Image 1 (cartoon, one colour):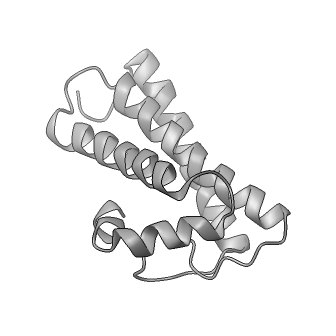
Image 2 (cartoon, helix red, strand yellow):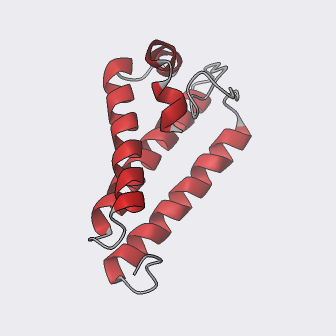
Length: 123
């Protein structure tokens, strides 16, 4: 996801502006930073303390979900959800909200497993 977003930062910021919540510059830094940090940590240091990447992933998923829910509740038209930047655009609607819900569920599973370290997939 971050690769598509990084490929056209002005376009990604324009998408985030459609959500009409917060500064698109700060949102792009927070979302990309979270995705890159959590993904990189899980890929390159999977045996280290898993709580940090799990928490960063959960925070990033919560931010994306919060953006989607508030825009949907306010009836905003968001033509491209921004998941892959300007590429593979998908308009904001129930499918995106369900996908965000599934990401939050996965984040909760990661946090639980990281907290107990039992069943952590990279031990």
